[in-house]
Length: 420
Ligand SMILES: [Zn+2]
Image (cartoon, rainbow, N blue to C red; front, side, top):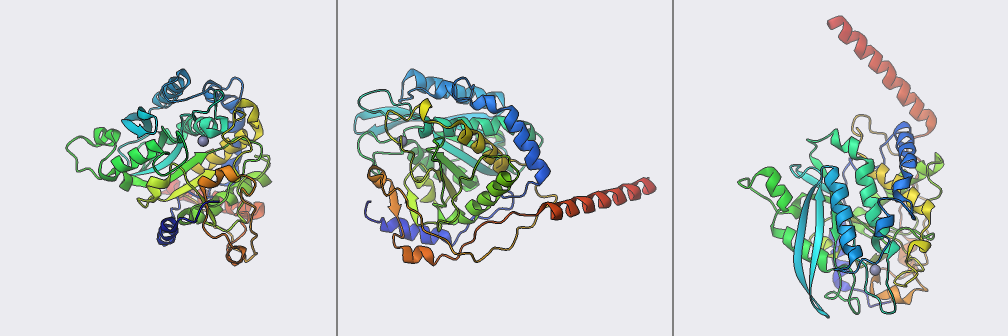
């Protein structure tokens, strides 16, 4: 494990004062909506088929910068999201790397650039250069990219119903995440460092076009309500913990949503380990330049890392189709913009159940240069007074709520009929 990054700790504690909370991103779809969503996802499962799924199979190839697989991935992203009406921006730049200057390109796709705020979903699309063979990076990050396309396409009809929403879904596909040599602050995340720096003082070109060139523009970063960063997803041992303190509450809500999906039989198992105290570990990744600029980020990267991490075995054979299918349903449920505000369901009170510490990557020393144990002592961990999520509303309570809505609707209808 590396030395604890002091600057990061102070940043964490400072940002923790600014806990992210927005009622639009939470566990509020009712049982019927979740069931319908899960059934639709099931029907569309072929999109993410490992051998022939149109959103995954074409990118389960080496995607080193400039390679044919890299170009094919760019094309799939642009074609898929362009067809859905997303506005595409290219953030082209030349990175200074240990192997010289390398042209790179982040891809930004925004559904409704005229909206005031963005909900960002992000992953890196290039794959690492490895000695000894062609590295595919199925978990790193072909599956995250495919899941982003799946969310965009799977929710397209619902998103289209709300074209004037104040909140737009925005997808960022980062280039140059991988280090050329050792992972350091300067040899890693080339694309995200470039984009965060650009967005700190500039709007995205798509936003400028949508709001006209004469409008008063604010930096794009100020529009970002939340970034959800996906990485290392799709292996059988897939598991997440709350890595970022400012979004810890949101992670717990995601855990609650997952428990509801699980108890209704829509997914095969749970992935959110909500018993690990938030913030005990952090993993360096594409979100760093955004966190440093105070953007709330939920980092969904498998911890521990997959066994195949940064080996030539991180290819199609390392993937578990059930994990991919489950993640599709979980992410679609989370990002669904269905009319959540009409009838917000109340969250159950939090319990005082104690939490347990987890064994994080102890046998994966190579991952150490990306993982910081912010609070390594279990003393601190066991004093965490967080909660274990509970189902949001029992079926009986939900039925009662549903009946009352029906009765109310009937009354309103009768009233309106009389007035007319
Ligand atoms: Zn990697």
